[in-house]
Image (cartoon, rainbow, N blue to C red; front, top):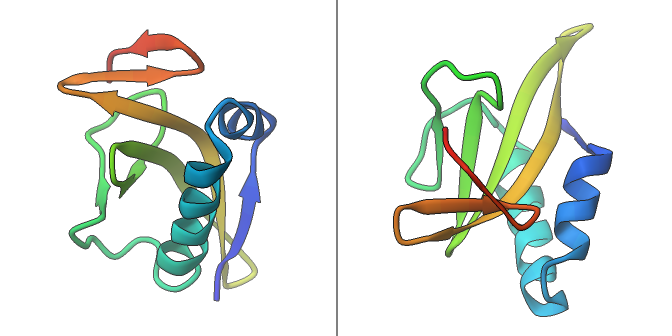
Length: 99
């Protein structure tokens, strides 16, 4: 079972999301990243090399970006950012991001 940590930036991103969607996103993080966070599925996928994050979790139109670290045989999931996808554009913290 992986431990999950939210970065301060990710907490700020979540705070700007409506409460209804925030609860859905947090539930999806717990459901899909608690066990085997590095196994690709329809909702999570590894990203091409970039300076931002190595994995993406899709939750409807929202995206959760995270890295997974190993510590003493345990996996630690670090949530780096939460954004919204509008068509082919990604917005994180109100700014458009290019991955």
